[in-house]
Structures are given as structure tokens and as C-alpha cells.
Length: 513
Image (cartoon, rainbow, N blue to C red):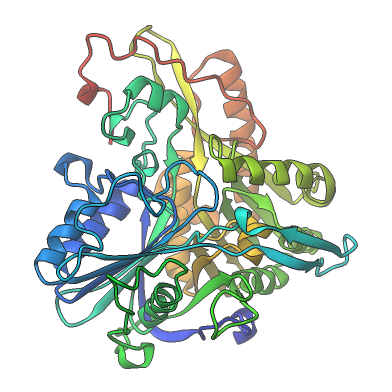
């Protein structure tokens, strides 16, 4: 049994017993499940949105957008509300208030969807390393760099219970993807956009959502109510405050359920009930990494990698003998202003503390992903495209325990200190091994059974990833089909030059999802 000290003691919400957790890898599986949940709800549907697209298709084959589904459910008597991040600057793939055109069916009085927009906070204060690897320094981030980054969906399940979804996949078409991560899959192209341009500019994307049933759903719901009622743009003339339909203590435990903690990052002075904010995600990371040592395996997937404190703790775990496998984005946030800012911060951090502490350590391997496929234009030619790692997950395996966390929180001091984020954390060794094996099967292109065996052998797993990364790089350089999808972080992948690739070919024959 995992020590209770692993849980975040300073977090808003405590760990709760009796929950069912399911994992949905990549957008196809996640949004099909969320779409079904939308259509099953009879009482309420509540959403938190950061980045989003009004034309987003949860199930591309249905040709029904998320907003069309929400309008339809509201007309059917379901209470539908959403709280949306209001960016301070013009930011692509967001839904600012006011939108250039009124969103039909939203904030139009009784019988419409109620929507509120929320501006984010900045952060000022000292930043310290848990192990004094660097001198404390003062951070001063203006609100223009803040972001309400949570992605959550909460609803009744139509049968007297409740379900919540917590993850990182944005409801933007380019973020929808399948486990094949095919660079030619036109279902990732937004309505009315040029397929060639969209697929060249936006790589395939790997991400995860979790569903929750049981008392922890009440905490995801409480977060929504707090954020919705505290939104900075409340549209008080056409919306009303939300009242939580149920509390965590009122939701029955699931039979044979597991212990789950809902974790957040909330900036100080954002909501009256938590004037000091909430850094529960960071606390959990530090607690679990602090327990990792000889015989332990740490597996990380993350878009960013520059929270100095967490990197310090990873370094300490490596020094104690833990093996660390980190799958990171090759070009995080490419094409967006927040991404450019955070990429610059990562670049600075990478060449300072992170490079010195982690990148060269013999127990750490930093990796990224790419997928290769045959080019239909030229026989024998390969198209290789990096995969954006948008998932934010960490699983740590000890000798007789395992702990996993995942959600929207990046390993970035923006996400860990003042961006609004939500993760869940849970302990169930069998489920965690199974889910990590599913991820490794996708990335390494091996069977789930082979991957499952590796989860119990830290040294073998570590060497398998490193060997495949080296072999795949050689195959990439020689124009051969790689054996899997793992490469060393920093690998430069060829540009996706797709001109003429769809000429005379039915797009439907090219997609593999």
C-alpha cells in the first residue's frame, strides 16, 4: 500500500475512496466516450474549456459539432453550462468573449446554453528548488501570460449517477487523433480549411483523457461551480450562478473502486475560498518522485519540461538509482503565442539547470515520438512526422506500489504555479501497469504483453527505449521504415511536404484510423 504521505496534503480536495477510473488514449477514443456521455445526460452537462473551436467534431464521421450537441441537449431540457478561458491577448484556437459573431444558442435567455468567460491571473513571488540546486529567484509573470488551462466535462450519466472527464485534449480538430497518428488523416482538418496546409502545419497529436465515477466526481464538479460562479465575465444579465447538483460525500462509492485525488493548480487571489491558491499537482509530483529510488521506474509523458523544482526531484531520483523514461514534445506549442513564450522559457531552462541536472544522467533518457508511413506518391519513399506529445502523465513504479497522475498540468512552472490546471492521481498497480503497457505498445510498436513484462523490469525497459531510439534515428537517416516511434529528444524530423499527395486519390483510402 502506498504511503498516504504521497497524496497532496495542501490540496483543496482530499483523496477519496471508491472510484472507477478509465483511460482513453488519443482523441478518437476520448471524444467518442464524451459524445456518448453528452447524449446520455438527462439533468446537467458542465464544461471547462481553455482552447476550443466552435466547429469541433467529437466524432468526425457524425458531422455534428460539439456546440450543436450542446444546443440540442439544452433544448431537450438538460442544464448546459460552460466556463471558458478569456485570453488577454489574441490567441489562436480560442473562443474569446465577445466572439466575432454571437454563438447561436448561447446566453440567449431561458432555454439556452449558459456560458461565462474567465480571465486568468499572473504570478509574483519567490521560486525555490526543493534541493537547493539553484538560488531562489523572483518571478513576475503578468496576467497576459496566465491561462485557465483545465479541460473537464461533468454530467449525470442518465441512470442516477455521475461521470467526469479530466484530461488535456483540447476540443480543436487538429487535436483529435487516433493511435495510428497518421500524418495524412484528414479527420484532423478543421471545417473549410485546406487539408494540405493544415496537415503540413499541424503534426499528429498524442493525448489522454480519464473518466471518473464515484465520489471524486464531486470534486471535479465543485471546481466547475467555483470557477463558473467566480468568472470575471459572468454575463449576469443572461446567466445565473451554478448550484452543485451533488457533493462528493453524496455520491456512492463504486464497488471495488480505488482511491483517487483530484488535484489542481490555481493562482493566488483567484477565488475567495482559496486566497493562497492551490499547487496540489506540484506537491503530488514532488511527493511521488521523492519516494523513487533504486529499483523504481519513472515514466513521464509531457509537453513541457521546465519546472525547476520537479526537474530537481527527477535528478535526485536518478541519483538514488531510479530509471527515468521521459517522452517529451519535439516542438512544444508550435504556432501559438503561449507556446512561443513557454518554448523560450524551456529553451532557457534546458541550457541551464535542466541540462546540467538531468539530460546527461545515465539513469535518465529524454525521448520524443515520430510516426512513419509510406508516401503514396513515390514507391519506397517514407513520410516521417513528429508527434506532438500533449499528454501530461507520470507513472512511478516502486517494488510494491505504483502511483499515476495525469490531466492538463504541464511540467512547466507556469502550469505548476499559476495556470489553472486539473489532474487526477490514483494508486492501483494492476491498472497502472496495464495502461502504461498500452501506451508503450503504441509508442514502441510491440504487443501489450511484451510491454507489460517491461513495466516490471526497469533496467530492461530503460534500455529497450534507448536502443529503439538509436535504431529509429539510423533508419530515419537512411530512409528506411523505423521499427517503432521512439526517438531521442531533439531529433530534427523532415518537413511534412505534402504538395500533390492527394491528387487523384480518395482521402478516405489514406487514413488508417
